[in-house]
Image (cartoon, rainbow, N blue to C red; front, side, top):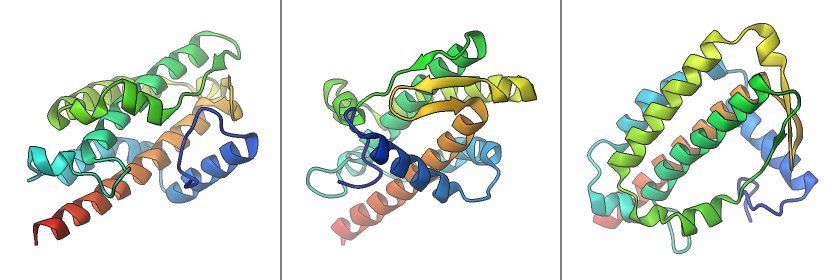
Length: 183
């Protein structure tokens, strides 16, 4: 299992390794800039892909581009809820979720990339407007993640930016696999 896998039953050590790896991808890049850039980088990464291309997994048992883009939309939906909870409540519990169960049970394999991209764009813009209006005190507010412990909004901003980079890299890898299959 990769450090970037996200089963619901992960241990605290696994959760720490996941968070560290995601933040390492971000490095010292401006997280808000990354979150905004993803709005244009994602459609650019998908440009020219056919529906069949978007449905081709990277390898047997791995996600396709359809899966990844739907995951990004749903991850931002989860983040939208978490942001609002933390901004409106004191130290709310932030539940984790199993991305593979979501993928399977919510039929990511049947999700048209264009619809998932549209969903992602709408939700991301909503989240960015909320972050843009946040005060320093708002960014310091904390929720208690069920797997990772205390997470401030500022930390979430960094985490979701690193998450974007992870999945943009994954899409690029899958695109190379699709291209290799064509030749």
